[in-house]
Length: 165
Ligand code: FES
Image (tube, rainbow, N blue to C red):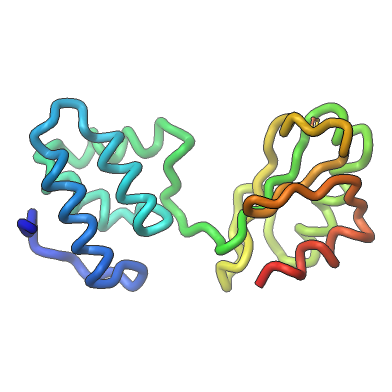
């Protein structure tokens, strides 16, 4: 493994993660157009892309920070803020909307103090509004991690969400 630049300090990135990040950079840096691949793999390691990591990647692959940072803000698959351990995806498609997903989302927002696109301070949950999940027969639908929950209501949703620690 080759260190690509002086390793910065970051509370969310431990030595093991930095080692994996170096491996990603070293194995991709000579490949033209590697920015997205490196960012995606580094995000998989850390869970998001802190600005210090973007700077480290920029140095490592020899591409200006402004360009690398621009890529992270252009593509929605990249997150510059930490995500929760559990991602709550609430479907805001038509069928779910008609069946009351707004009330379900509102209950989650009020209980956990987060809005769509936000993460709880303890990083337990992130809440996302998403388009039709393809399970309209189960509307309204919420997906938590890999689990699909159908026929949720504003009364039932807290019991469902609370199972995820
Ligand atoms: S509209 Fe929600 S699953 Fe289709």
